[in-house]
Length: 458
Image (cartoon, rainbow, N blue to C red; front, side, top):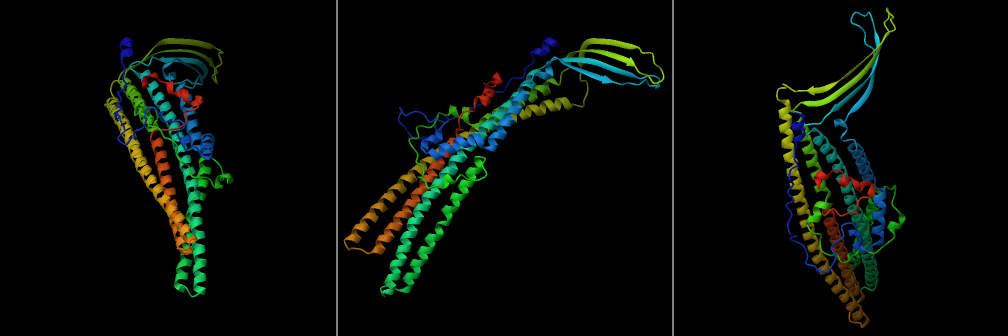
């Protein structure tokens, strides 16, 4: 029975990756261009503020710190995963009394037990611990991926709001100048008071529009402080800066990299390992528990009415066999239930892979559309810039009025506002793509060695 029990094994199910050979929305890129770097993707913006914020967040964020502590807890338990099937030794004391209350004793002894972990029990226990460890590691990875993406998003929102504020300030100045010119024309009876009312209203509308980007600046700075684990924003963040601009993005990583980097898929794989371990334990419960036991006891008579001063010692050694006979089918039901849970975990893994593919495809499509939108808005802004310049030339030649020049300037600044929004949306689509791919710095050495803790999952 011992030899046969050691041969029982619950194999891990084969996980179907089901990844496409090519991304449908991938942009054609030269073959010589290096592949995208998932570990330092945010450096493509070439923005010192973003680089600094990401470095600070990775060391100060509380979510990452909590996930790291949970990983350390899982690793501490994993190191003793074989303890249930290893020999154990304990010491205990007792003070039994004879049923007739004629004598009492003080008993001290050592008990040693060793369950052999047959019928797949040892492997099941190890897999459950490995699943917990891999899940904790995936959680830490997910926290880092989400953190980097959120920090970059807030930095983009901050700089974009500052760029929008600058455009709106130019519009306000132009509207104020327009209102002053109309007021002068009214004084000269060259314009009606309704024209002055409209000009004043336009100036007030431009002034009110400044509230939105200023609120966005404050909110983005406060969210950055939270992500970095700080009480309040750094005043340096509020200093005006240029809107981030993407450099050459390079080709998107191959589909195989999705399995290596996306935390959701790693989490689903960990759940499969844990479910397989639970099934192995449930299957082992259908068979006897076999082990060895030994004990050594010493007793001293400390009877209340009788003092013989005797001291006795006795030892035992032998096999321990626990054979389940009848439990109304609970063990069989538990085994079937764990089998269905394992199938569900495999399906969840497949869904995680499909969800990852869908997220990447959507992000690629969004990035492609936002890139086209940005180019169109850039052309429009350039056309309005030329029109504004031409209008100034016409004004110097006396062929148009100052009001026409102001209207052209306002149209140009509005076009710049559209371009700022388009660039922000394209940058955010780029962030969404690398979050979908699981882009983040590699785990530190103190966390990364958990990857090789269980060779069965490779």
